[in-house]
Length: 123
Image 1 (cartoon, rainbow, N blue to C red):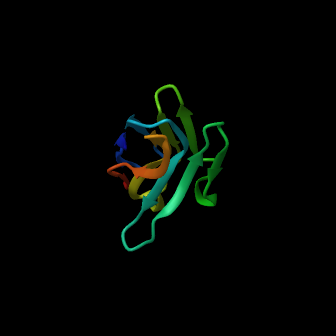
Image 2 (image 1 turned 90 degrees about the vertical axis):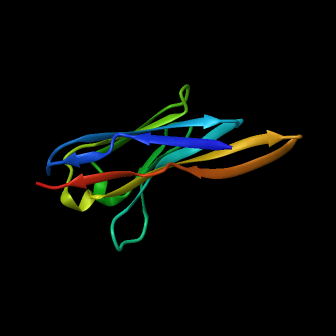
């Protein structure tokens, strides 16, 4: 299985920056997509950004030009650089990883989630 550990959340003033990181560990053959979701109080979880193993990225419209997702395949880690933060970015952010493993010649695929990290943008 794959375990994800997140870090980097916190409290920041509007216009400030934060960087979230997420590292994967465990037993797996490969990790394909990694990314970040967020969930604000009384709102549905939404996909913020994703990145493939080849480096293709995707962002929700509300963060384009402000957030940058990147990946270190050697470390099985994904980063989310968040600039020009707004109060509406306040949420719990969850990283995920889509993995493939083999056991007894049987291929298994799944998605693992981080524990979530709080990001609060407030003056």
